[in-house]
Length: 253
Image (tube, rainbow, N blue to C red; front, side, top):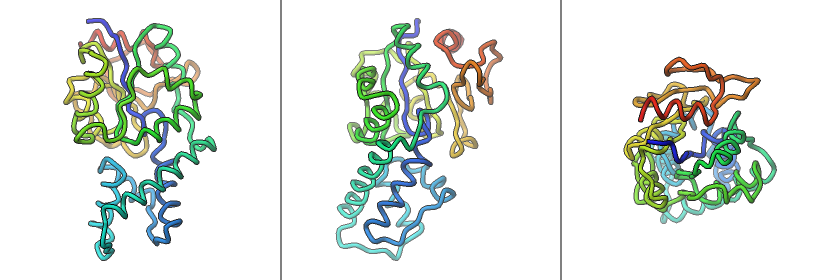
């Protein structure tokens, strides 16, 4: 089975958007709406176990702010999340969040090698567009054959729906692909779709369990800034290249 496609999660995988983008945007949205809610970095670490911004707000209210009441909670939460998304896009427009090490380089190498690219995330399409456009240029959105984002599937990660959606749209066998994730929910989702997964952890996910991961790295690395192998087979590679991905794929397919 030859490697044909790379499928990427977004938040925490392509960039540290959770800490430097989403958390900041949530708190700014709360303040703008006159709410006295403040999410600390430590609290957000826990809240990230819940995928989807609106569900995350509802979980916060249920566990940490149960005295808060609203006659139409669903629409109120939706309005918070809508404002938060606008603020997040503004932060991206200001260049608040760069891509993680090795991401841009790997995109270019993959395209030169004629590997197909896709995105599988449960964040909103506007968030994906903002990150890609402001780090790689708006034309880079066309690099991805499918951008699976937002509520295009019934269930968010850790359900595998979003990966099944992308594979179906691309008419791909999962055996010919590699998924890139950063979290426990992410690898559960990818594994549900029978995808082999490369993990790059971040500050929120470095203690997560990653059963079935091909390899766990601190980041994709660069020629002058090698990755740290957290778990995986010994390799001569010091940063993630297309050749290294083909090596991994051959070992695990």
